[in-house]
Image 1: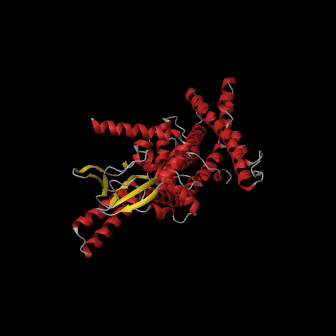
Image 2 (image 1 turned 90 degrees about the vertical axis):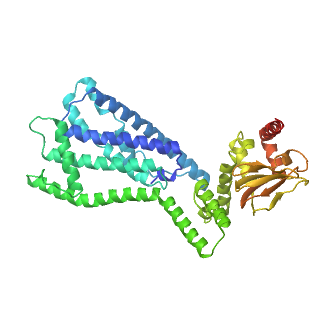
Length: 435
């Protein structure tokens, strides 16, 4: 499908949800007005106005999206992409027809008798919602809330149409409460679709029996699809939690089998707890390992950006500055009691703690401070030629990221604001120590 090839932003995806909701309301309301032959009221006109506005905005946005596709194709393949969907294409005709405000045109002229027949014209929006379902189904990734919304709305539309079909075959003749009659039709539709069939509402004509048999056959398939989709969404929501439990269970069996010391067990479980709470899964690298190296490098940069975005010196940095810093970071690992930086040496790098605990040790005073996930040390080495005044020692197994002075100099040439930000942070740190 044409539109699936265009990369959509989150705002565009949520807009599609609004369009889908507006069309769904129209597709639910129109057959109800037909089978009950309801007169047009003010709330009908307000609702129709809202739906038409959404349809017009969506039609304009679809035109812009097609233009964007052509530009993408021209940029990638160096030729002008000719859209297969022309102005006389069915989907475009459906979009145009969906924008026509039938009720708003006929009502001011008092053509009330024509409004009932005009409602058949509004049924063309059903084709648009079918197209929307195919379109949205083409997305690989959708927010969970949207998936749930689409599933529920499709189920409501289907049940409403089946109930309206029953009312069309057995119309209300006593002039009673239409809401009660519609409620009974919905009750019959749901009990038939779910194959429960209490038998308190039964068909009494040949066409009614044929209609019921068709709905019974459809119900078996539809009921299975709905239950399957709901179950799949629930299982997907708990998938990572289940994987975490299995991983920790296997790890616990491993520790007990090989009689691993308690302290080492604590360190290992602590590390895995960090992975499961701070990252998407237990192995971010494995997730992107099948991608080309260039894409892996780009994704690793954004993973690093998430890490450094809360570092005080980098909080005020622009997106491009953060990206340059993240791409310059180098990952290093340290074992407990391993020295990371030595007192008296000239520093040429700063470190950011991704995971673990490090101690800042001053001779004669012992441990003066402890740093953990998201904190950094050694910034002064990037700003001035000075010797380190303390040792930094790994207290646990540590995962650190290093930023070298050479890369830092290149970054501040492009982003001078970074230097000002780091100087402010360093000045504040010195002031806090004196106070």
